[in-house]
Length: 594
Image (cartoon, one colour):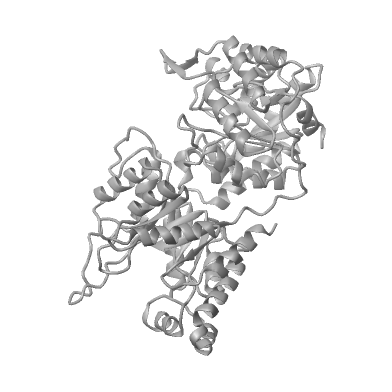
């Protein structure tokens, strides 16, 4: 333990309050890069720090929220990342030195991108952007790094990985939640705990968006899901817009102090404020929490290196023909019992009447309590029908969507029948990204924003790898945050495709489908376009004869173990007659490895 984590083990620390809204109250518009004031008006920033320290704050956060290259670029300040962050640390350090007592300086780090930027910036660029900022903050001497106001779980996990791997100082990870108890990404406090539990962060918590009551509810949920130290920095309630496009907050200091005590009772060991909180709020909280011991289990001892992200284990089930939902439900239950935490519903592949993947996803998620993913093809619906279906799915809790162009099934005398084709998969990705931004396909504003986790298909078996890569990049640029492969039967083509996507660094879910016979393998290799089945696999299945199902499962289990080393998740396809136990066993074993 260093001095900061040692303090967390025995007492509640009081953090400062809002920097941005106090600077706004001093006459600075919120649409300017407030971190630039570290250079142009350092005296004002110092005054804010001093006021919080005089009120009793033991943690002071640098005025560097949003001070990364991508965000500063919107104000023409991208080339001043180092100067702005270094000045922010210097001003905070000077204020801490003048406090006459022990004060920790926390480097404030926001998400790398705004919501508008998110779908245009690949993961690798987000990580590089954060790494640049964290390196400056740590190099200038912060005691810890605080990741704050992260609305998307994947971005917070990325930032944790960067901060732990770059800084060498304790890291506090804070997500922000809406009134429905979910992050913008649709994730709950329990989801956050599961995603972060394996990482050696100094504290996990929440800040912004919610006032004291809402933050207390989130902290209680976090305490139920993790033994990590907790932090809480609520807003001073909801803002009131006044004349001149200014915002004020009305929560009284006594009320804030009462909830500071409740937050500590719920397990928070860091309590401060976010938007709208003033030195008066912090003073009241500090008085209420003075010499209050921590009420939680001992913090997790930080490791020397971040662990590998937990492996997602999923199962892919084809949306069944009409009248066969019960069979699909039985398959889903078996997959869940084998360890699957995600059920991917694929579109039906025959010309028979099939249930919609979205409908089945809603049904299974509500009935079984397992997260679902719906694969949505575009060929058979107008853009308005697609939009309506997806908004309905979101309202019913299905948030993870894989966008597919799809193809009409063969129809007897009309093997080349066409579909509606209002948009392809890239257009559907863009539609979902727009809904997440609060606009429909025509650019009209919605009453609220969705929180879809947007995915797209890629095919490692594609004959033209360059064309497949180009298509995948278009999907990612349009807003896809993860990709799900078509079933793979050998790792070499998958490796080539993923190497080509490395600079974009999306989350990759690899679909593995066990082969059941030599005839099936031969059919796929010779009659189905863009499917790669190795000669060695064909030979092994031919030799297996009546034992082909077991041999196919063994080969697929070996593939699961191999791809699990680099993929974010493995999705096991479950056609009728498949022997899936060895595949799930291999996936569970891979997930258990450190």
